[in-house]
Image (cartoon, rainbow, N blue to C red; front, side):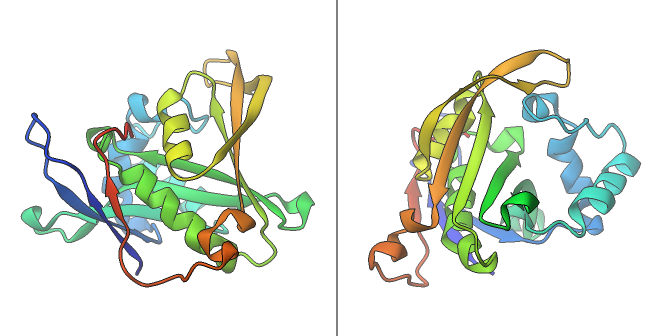
Length: 214
């Protein structure tokens, strides 16, 4: 299992200085952890997926949309103090567009609200772009579309190396039915450091997350 160590500078609020981030498949046994973000309107505000009000709904959503997904991972962090080991605190997924022959795919992600501001989402997405192009043969372009008001998500994408391409007018329909502009970002297979001759080592990547918002 890949790992990234996120070193976050000690802050006045006493937040822990570091946390190890890993990615792994999300399963039905993770329903309780999944509820932590899937039932939170603060997290799901900009996502069209319905909130999970009960554990049964969480199980159903994992069964129907996660199991069998072409590339869906739980974002996990250490929770040794609670005796739980690496527990899911969010999700990240890559969905290839079938009509593009796997050349292009969409990135989506969510993170528990209590862990925003510690560089975890940035670390997870950075891990995705270092491996997903190898794991999904033929993939050349990864894109992310964000609500124009979701500034936190836009900053995360930029910190993970995505390039802003423009604004899509009247593009996203929120759960409320409101139609909003969207900002589109992309990351190409050729944008990876390894694509320019850098060596891909096994050493963890260290992020300094003082200014990371999600």
